[in-house]
Image 1 (cartoon, rainbow, N blue to C red):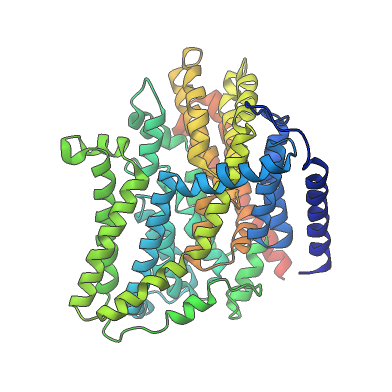
Image 2: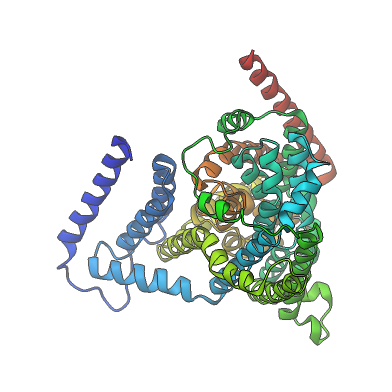
Length: 539
């Protein structure tokens, strides 16, 4: 750690110790505790502290913990005893014990085990040998990753880890930086799920909207989901034209020279070395069949929780499903089936399969730890009433500004999602407020506002270092998390700016088939100008 980082952490530590000492003997709080910072702009300070520290120090664990401590202190009005109790009980314990979160952790562990099993059976290596004969350019590697990310549209968590494990050997061979791989994974995870009618995200949105057919609204909002659609278009444009800008350009230039990481940090280096022990009996089917089993099992698990096997239609079952429970059940059943298949095929022995259990758990350790910290930070932010503060801004700003309602919703949703690290939590808070405006605005404008809310939630989630999808994209690509965030941010902010302009236009035009082509052409034109500027600098 350099001198600047030491000074920052020493100052923070001193401030925390001083606050502890001055308030440790303060009088006890009343039975009904109310924070002095509740529902004020200060409620957004803890995530801001964590994000800024992470970007400055390049160290995510301590940065998240400092943000959690700051949130607990602010909630307790700097009462040491209440702060510790809140942080541990209402933060870490509550989040680890949460049914939804436990399901996601089980899903992560199962995926980690499946990835290790496939690698040890030689499935990934066989696919790599097969793909090497067909994918031998950088452009081809990026487009292959891009298309695979679009194909796995069921769930963003599943997308991040599956695409990363399958495509990492191919992108490494073709000198694609880990940061670029993480960006492509992240950009084809949440954005794709948010425009896929059959996905865990569509189910979540449908469950929030009351008084309307949620799936119908979701489908009608897809053409207006500018952030998701423009993000996908930007990846295709930049991959085809072979250029990058911002800090990503440095990573890509270094990758062409053989350095896939640019920085010294190699968070998954040990796991990759251990993955090198693979079976020579592996075939491409040992990768494809387990992935298909996993997809089918996860879909079956999700629709099962929605009542599909009790007579509910497939679409309605998706709309009512418990994604966390369904993914956990599906992934565990898939793990058992894949393990039996690989042992019977003698691609791995039973002992090797059992040895993969702790290794798979270990591989998911960094992602699980960051997720738990991020969930706890989100809990502290919610206790401070950040959602109430942001919702108040939204309600006051939307009055009398009907034509600007979509862009207002987009910006507010992006800010809330960025600060809390959760897109689902964001549209859960804001969508009911948007729907409540239906009596005063046209139905088409309501559709645009709903889409703007969903797009803003994805945008903030895409930019936030504490987002679970961002964390898992880093995990899937085996990329340092802060490297992923810092290289992705310029791209995400660029698309966000174009999308914001598009929502201003949409508020007045209210026609997706005019707005989308215009903004797509405008974005490509700006990217072409950036490409010329970059090329001029290279010369």
